[in-house]
Image (tube, rainbow, N blue to C red; front, side):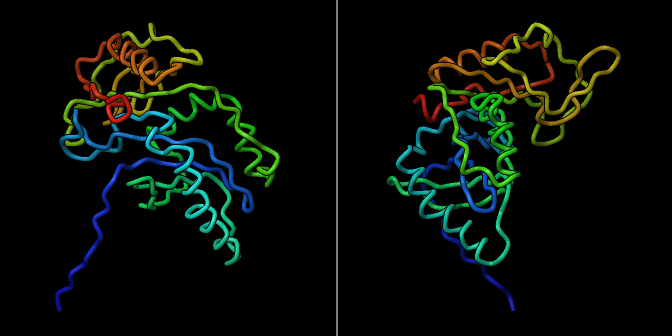
Length: 244
């Protein structure tokens, strides 16, 4: 009476393709690659994500085109045929090997921390794009891309993804730059007695843009090093796949 489940082991490198759908039209809004393992060199247990960067070099324009034509568009067409057209944000988790993408999963949301790097690159135009998706006007829209890169480093509470202490103070956040090239996104913080304290496992997303991935990485880690949080930790190798 026992059952055995046999699954295929998919080899390759994972990356995510993000699209907006309005029920009929599909518009790509970028690619990203995250870092699931808690430790440098992709060691230790899985997490919700310890960092990400965009674009993902492994998901080249040629591979993205294959994924759109062979995976995303047929899925959306079939949903429409069944009378339940999809409208909203869709991300396709892809496994890429030998130039061929295979679908691992769909999620109907932006990823975390992939969303942070996408928002840095898209900027204010994302509001118009989302509005168009909601109103069925994506056929009128296009994405204006700068030739840039974005990278985010997640700062997490010591012990995460296991047991971790809450309420540890975080200092020097008021010294961090906030502009189109630098941003600290709060994920698990609260203000207590005029001080910022950690309230979650993944706490801060320190994000930067640059003309190159290396420049974005240097800016992000420069900010991380300026944050005073003895109760936190972070991976020191975000972007290693792309940078070698």
